[in-house]
Length: 274
Image (cartoon, rainbow, N blue to C red; front, side, top):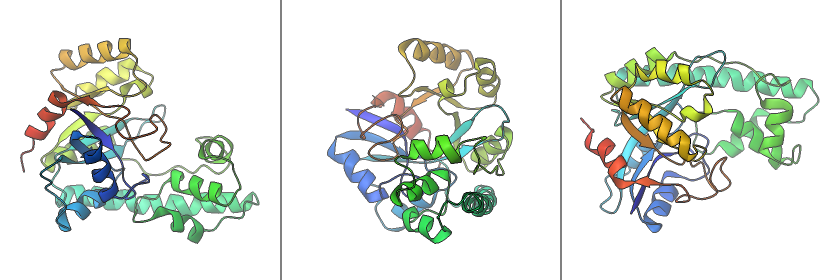
């Protein structure tokens, strides 16, 4: 069997509902699955509060993925086995959500000032259950209206960093995120180090976290060996996953296309302190 410790639902910027994601995982025979929505635990709250968790056919790990403050690199920290009702975690999520809404409004104004006919309500139509509104939702709405042919084009022309409609937002620091994840009883993992582009920064952050995402779709065999060595150097748990957002995701086309060994995922499942 195989597992996946990095997936997203439509409670952030994924395409599938939590039920659809879990059903797909079971249909393809995954053993362990972590839901790691961006800046929210609403998706895992949904499956918990609606009696979908636990599932006798799939071992589910509650997670969350945070973007952190770094002027030069995209640094993401994933938290596993977090208490989804923890006060410190909820406070950080609420602060980030407020910042996302402010940024959302600013990006829409930037697009409108450049004669792109898009309204907030049209973006909200594609967000589904998500309170974690981001540029991906805006890109989907622009594609839906026929303004751009693809989300990639929307980012390359308007929404990407440094592009005309881009707007910055609040990000917590790595230290703040790691501290909150641990307060919530979880383990903090540095996500997709190969996308950071600076191994010195990767090693610096590895001194602060509990795990490193060694297995990731864009990591080549030499990258995997390098990050395995770094994880061993800092005595970190080894993680991995597909970063699946739905069909046509950035790195994989379907759930199950990229998986990790069960024994890797099992260590995170057993680390649950709640």
